[in-house]
Image (cartoon, rainbow, N blue to C red; front, side):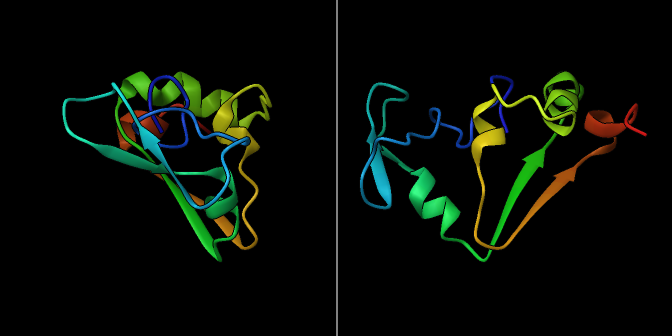
Length: 93
């Protein structure tokens, strides 16, 4: 989960994209792809990795149910897990 709460590192997940992957253009010099919501939501298990104190506020908003965050719109078929380091979750009770 990025500082801008994206589902992928490259860009926000797209609901309008068809298929399982979408091309990412202009994000980096090398070619990249990202998984779409349909691909992520068909997962039996999905996970977010939250690392660093700069992600703490975004992670807290997500935990409090802020539906405006792209990450909050992910509803996989199976379990959704969050993994975070101490810096990202230290003030969460």
